[in-house]
Image (cartoon, rainbow, N blue to C red; front, side, top):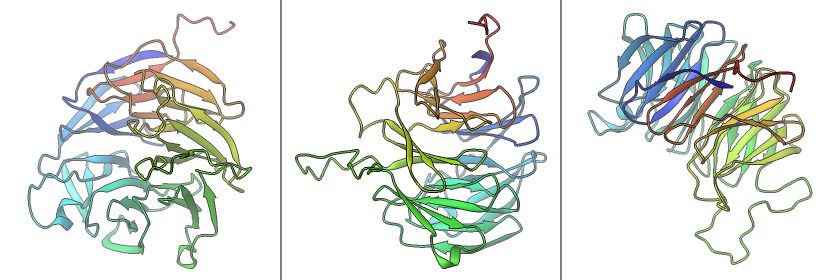
Length: 337
């Protein structure tokens, strides 16, 4: 893959990006409070909006390509804390806020939109997970008292959602039966044989295993990935078995103090793409764990945001220096090799 387009529209780090599932649209948000919309068919930027007062992060398309939801970045700009940490429902068509979702008392760390209805989930540094409906500003449900900052993910079928736990656990809930509690729990710090994957032989309390910073279901719902520090762990989404463990390149021997990187499944669910601490984008096979490619071009900074387009050979990556790349098949590579 090679950069078909490279944009330098953000003046500081790109903190999130998302593809629409059916339309040729990509949206990015940055620490510069800007929201950029791109047409992935033409490779052109089509709109720029701003959220200067509250900032923007964790952007996510709704079912409409003309509307997004995103979390606020606490800037101490106005009102009570509950306003500073609201999730905002923003119309890209006429640049208006359609609704505010208030309830979290600390930063929203992840947002997951349900693929089959108007509900979405948010995880927050206030140690709660909340369920919302786009049609009403009131919170529909709360999963309280998470032991650490939770991250959330929903499967493409809309039947199951996952929530991370501070001790490396991942709990699965039924979308229509969450009130009955989790129906399964997986472990990321312990492998299938019961071995600790992040040992601390000196029992140093400052050397805790890295927290999960990214959680994703594969498009077919059969796999689940979690990013812990410099490691990507792939699970069987039905029984929690560790099927693959991948080390993100460029991080040396570090396993704790690594800038959080996003990982993403390919549309077929057989490959995982992620940025590395070497400023490159890397691809691995989910079945073998072997790296199938690292793309020659580099970002100026760390490509912390990476997503594969839902139904085409197209990948977007955003870096800590504000650059956004659209990766397409390299015409100079002989596919027969």
